[in-house]
Image (tube, rainbow, N blue to C red):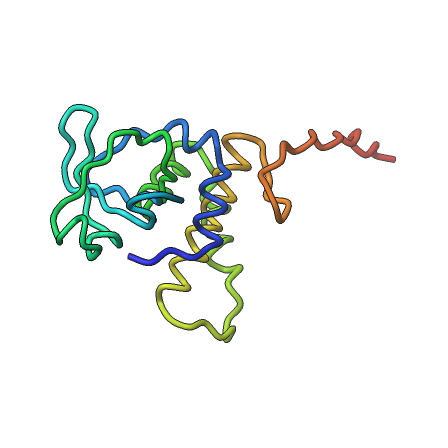
Length: 158
């Protein structure tokens, strides 16, 4: 599966989300460097070992077999749409927020295909999750804590 650079960057910088990750069969993750660099799908887990299939399987060292990874703390989890929706719903997000992100996609805006739509939807759900659960907002480079909005006094009735 392909992931955009934006997805990898934003999910990777969502440290609180990454710390909550408990690897499961079917999860995707990204390994940034070294042997086995690329995206990987967890096929099975045995103890602390993840047996995965992914981009690096075509290299001669792996010879089209499942690859063993042992330190998930060094990898970037890329949650599926289903994972994200489940987390957003558990965060007691207002249904209007979820509906709003669907409406926010500009009708008629040219997209390169369904994968771009899925990527943008995942990033929008990530934005809601980071805002509602962790009080953070993407500033273009990183997730930043939001300052508490000032509460305006109620208008007095005359």
